[in-house]
Length: 527
Ligand code: HXC
Image (tube, rainbow, N blue to C red; front, side, top):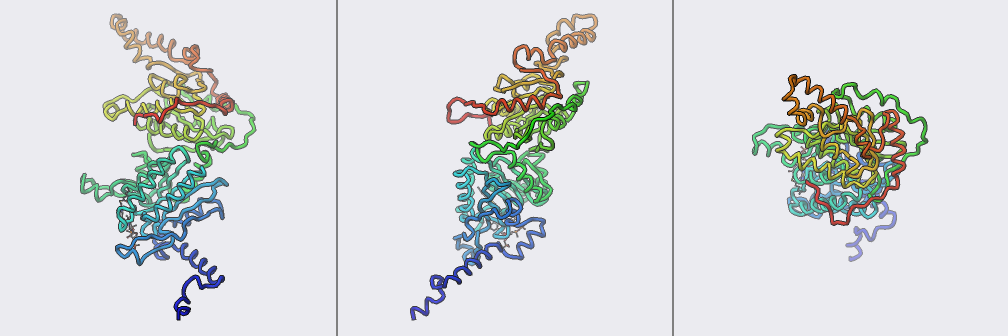
C-alpha cells in the first residue's frame, strides 16, 4: 500500500526519467509567461527578455542562474500562478570575450513586476559582479513593484538600490530601459552609470500621466512625459536615445568596449603602430573671426582614431560635448565646449553633464582630454536662481578631484572662471596645450576695456574711437596664449595639425601616473 502511494514521487523516478524532468523544466522556463503574452510583446515592437540576452552576449556564452526560482506569495490567487524564473532572466556571459553580469526582466510574467524572489535573483548577480569585478547590465522592462506582494517587493527594490550604490565606482553599471520603468523603480537606473532608452516603447517617470493630470492639471502623453526623447534632451536622465532595441543593445556593446571591467582594471587598449599622425585638416576648422561658431566635433574627429568617437548625452546640454574615443588605440574620455551651441558657454546643465562624465572616467581609469573654447559662465536670473553657483562648482570639483591622466588643449577662448574650471593646470591637469589662436583672459576685450579704461574713455573727445583703441590694446596684450605660457600655465603652444601626435605622446608619457587624494572618508561635492 505504502509503495503504491509513493509511485508518483520524484525520488522514485529512474535516472532517465529524472533527466527528462530536467529537460521539461528547462523547456518550461524558456516559455516565460506563455506564447500569447510573448506574441503581445512582439506586437508592441519589443523583444522578449531572452531574445535580448541572446543579442547582447557572445554566442553560447550565457550561463543562467536561478532559472527555476519561483515566487512564494500566496495572496490574490498568486498561489495558482507561478512561473519558473519569476519574471527575470539572470546570469553571466561575455561581450566581445569579456565577462558581464546581467538581468533581463520578462514582461510576459506579471508584467516583469518585481517580487521578493525576482529581486533576490537580481541581488545575487549584483553580489557576484561586485566580488568578481565585472560590469552589471540591467535590461529593464517592468510594471514596477509586484502589487500583490506589497512591502516585500518594496524591500526588494531597496535591496537593489543599496547594491547599486555600493557598486557605484567599483564596477560599471549600465541600464537599458526597454519598456515601462515607473515609480520608485526609476531609482535603480538613476544610480547606475549609463541609461539607454528605446524610442516609442520605453518610458521612465516617478508619477505617470494620470497622476500628473490630477495634481498639476497638465495633459501629457507617456512619450512626452517620460519617453526616450524627453529624457535624452530635456531632463538628461538618459544618455542614449535609441531608435529600436537592436540599436540599443549594439550601443551597450560599443560602450563596454571603452571601459574597464572594474575600478582596479585598465580600459581596453587596442594595438596601434604610430605612423603619419599630422592632421592638416585641423588647421582649417577655426574661423578667422573669433565670434564665428564651428563644430567641436570636427576638432574631435580630427584628433582621435578614425570613427572612434562615441558621443554620450548627445542631445542634452549641447553646449558641451562629452564622449569616449580612442587615440592610438588608447581609450580616453573627452570633454569639449561646443561653440556651435550657445557659443559653448558653461551653464547649469552643461556643468552637471560634464561633471558626471568626468567622475565616471576618473572612477574607471579612463584618461581625460579637455578641449576648451568657452566664453565664460552663462549670465541671467534663470541661471543664478537655479544655482549656477553650486552646479558650476560640480564641474570644478570633479576636475579637481580627478587623478587620471588629464590633458587640456585650449582651442580658442578660455575666459574668466571657465578658464580655471576647464581642467586648467592650477586644478591638477598634467599637460596643458594651446593653439596659436587661443585667447586666455579674465574677460572679453570690449567688456574689459569698458571697465578698466572707463575714466579715460569718458574723458576722451571721441569715446567711441578711444574704446576701439583700448580694445585693440587689450586684445594685443591679453587675448593670446603667451602670457599663460610665460608663466608655465600652458606647457606648449602647438600647431593644430600636430595636436594628435602631441596627445599620443602625452597620454603615453602619463600612462603610469599615480596620484592620490588626501585621506578622507569621502568628499562633499556640492550636490
Ligand atoms: C503585478 C502586474 C504589474 C504589477 C503589470 N502587471 N504590472 N502585476 N504587479 N506592478 C501584470 C498585469 O496584471 C498583466 O497581467 C500583465 O502584467 C501585463 O500588464 P498590462 O497592464 O496588460 O500591460 P500594458 O497594457 O502594457 O500596461 C503596462 C503597465 C500597466 C503600464 C506597466 O501594467 C501598469 O500600469 N501596471 C502597474 C504599474 C504600477 O503602478 N506599478 C507600481 C508602481 S510603484 P496579465 O495576467 O493580464 O497578463 C512601484 C514602486 C516601486 O513600482 C518602489 C520602489 C521604491
